[in-house]
Image 1 (cartoon, rainbow, N blue to C red):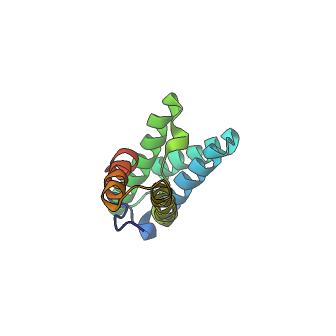
Image 2 (image 1 turned 90 degrees about the vertical axis):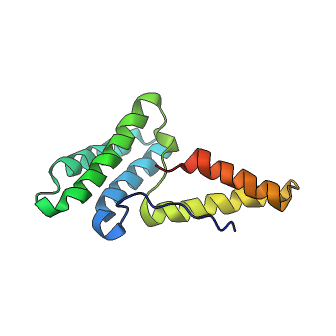
Length: 132
């Protein structure tokens, strides 16, 4: 497996953002299955959570993170790109590792050498995962 790892986004801390990550991930998974009704419910709860789920002043960063996840969905929705959204937290890292291992295996199967594989993996990371 490639030694590159998926960068954690700012404030992607499972302990503080577990519920926001879960809502976002459930939205993405439902949307990928074309379950529009369920995905809309998760998005609605995420939006409400971002708006009213952080009553304490010291929860500012968690609130901003939940708002960011809501904006990500909101920005992807009009262009029908929501199925391309990347899972967050532990689920996201597991999906990333699985996708990259599969990609590397396919590159080896078609005969690319190590240098080409590394270049192609780096391009995939840049284009598909970026820096968020």
